[in-house]
Length: 270
Image (tube, rainbow, N blue to C red; front, side, top):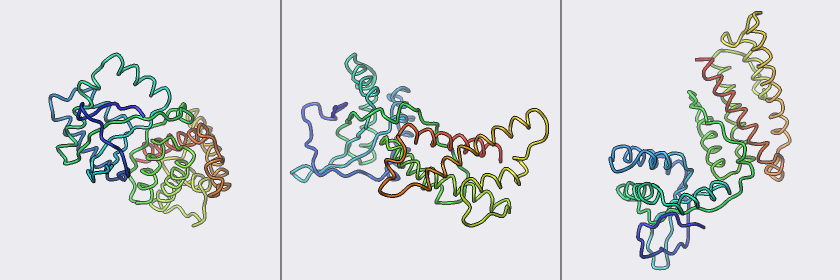
């Protein structure tokens, strides 16, 4: 565990009986904190970017005296951990500006953040960089919840289990579009069938006989083969074998493929 910052330089709070603030609650706090940092002249742009892009978790601890305090915790990959050590060793904007600003804005929200901690995890599964999660314009709460939960799991480097939620989101997304377009599909249709019906019957996915149209057919067929592989992985999944079914890098590959397809469909179908 690496102490990135202490709000009180003369003491290190005892960390006992730790619990994690739910991701959805912290997401709201983080958005407010980002807006506050944007409005404060003393918060540098690099400090804001660091806070926005670092997958911190918010945790709460009660020490043996019954005193409650919060701390930010980051599970960094091995390369990220080493890079941060080098930055802090050389002296940089983080300790001078970023960390104090972060703690101050949370304190203004009555969230007493006293520590910012970093722990070294594994880079396994994070060597394949994540495609950004798309902003889906969908009415289904299932889609929104599945995407949010997958993002939380990816932040803890758990790509194999995040894939389950990505699959759920993608399946619900395709089914919702089919329903909106009155494309008839079986209630038991899997991803492959949904995607086939969508590209066959949706007016914005139909292609002509031009050279570019033929190229799009090949691209759609390539996506279809990826979807079939994802179906195979899903159908063989069981609670006992779920995490071991795919290695993190391969799970991340599927996740990136689905996110790429979601970005494409959101753009194409608007």
